[in-house]
Image 1: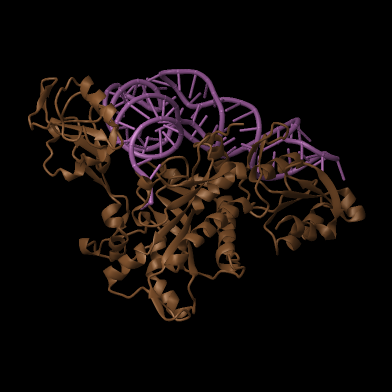
Image 2 (image 1 turned 180 degrees about the horizontal axis):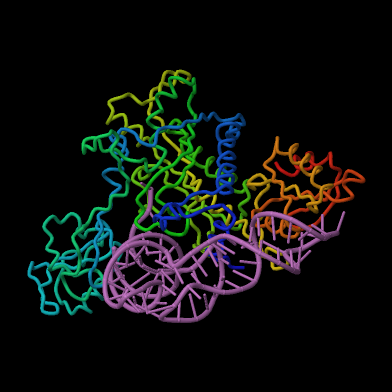
Length: 513
RNA sequence: GCGGGUGUAGCUUAAUGGUAAAGCUCCAGCCUUCCAAGCUGGCCACGAGGGUUCGAUUCCCUUCACCCGCUCCA
């Protein structure tokens, strides 16, 4: 069965999960709003995460519960934060476009050759003094390409490894008009490198002043590092321990795509786990296993999940010195049969605390008074999950096409994630079914999100509940009035059972973990 | 940012240089004892801006959004 994202987007809109932001104004690229059921689903996922991290964190390798505390830091922090974190400097990738082929290249991924004798050659009547190639191009491919361009010369670097070639950005005075792009047929088609600012900025204060420029956080993590010392000084935590945070983050994605998967405003669930350097490897493995289990627990099927270790060259700037990064990936409809990132577990080493210590002049190390007053800067293991992406994964995983039911489809949410746990349906709108239904509804809503739906025939009401993934429907009919039983209709099987009216609450308690 | 495609009601579709049509949904009422049933009535649309024209949803331009591909993705 292949799922079309169009159908998922349509369902999300039709049933109040996710709307395009600023819909009545024609939308805004990269922004989405969560409707009544979308926020319910998101809150359920967020709460499950918070519970699994802060309220009831898992047992560590030694069998005792690990220690994690919560945090909610500001979205806007002192801009120095992002200088220290490396985001201001390293978060803007210079890009180069080719006017001929319409290709775009990251300037720092381009390498190029210059003739050994320093003399240019003529191609299509134009002088060419440099030839650009994508990083990773093999020597054979380079030779082949030069042959195609009918260039017969000795080049700097051709006989050596590709890594010896000069990086494009290292050439201050490169003459672009004499440079042949990686896929171009003539020189002079490349644009100068352009900076892409990947952080959104703002200007706190009523007067717009360049000196007051600040950034909307591109990740929640830095707010945790900034509060590392505050937490240490106020919470009596001891190494190893974690700080967890859920919140919005903002990135100027070059191309927002795939519904809410890559948006410019999104929500993260991040936990920074601080530990002694020598324990980092053990905790890294521990958290990778824990995080995968979390996604299984909220209902994503094993077959749609995979763990993937980052290659060395795709590691983020902060993860380069550590044990690397492993992603938990989900098989989204738009990546299938491939997978897309849902969560990344990164070993950040002591990079962040070291940087912030240097930029702020504050001591951010740890004095271990239990183990001989040893002093060290903790290493950090970071499970960073996309809450927004998690919601999309839950919806995609739950989407079931079923021609045998009126709605033609249903959402197979795990009962704990379902926005509505149960619907109370009087079989008819007649006066004798309604009061009993209302009474049951008023009773259940104290503990569960339930809906009372009176209007229209029963089939339509079941269909609507199928579409929003409500796991159970309780129907009140004439028999209810006689023997105090109701029909319970189970979403996935559409099977009906009769249970006692007073057992309904226990039934839900047992079914919804 | 590039190339291609698509924009008519909540959804699916229609027609038209001159009052924009229908089915489903939705709402109200009736009827209904278990899966979008039936009857009656009702609400709701030409993505936005500009141009051509007596008149534009239709033709032209621009723009915005979405989809696909490229690119990017700490």
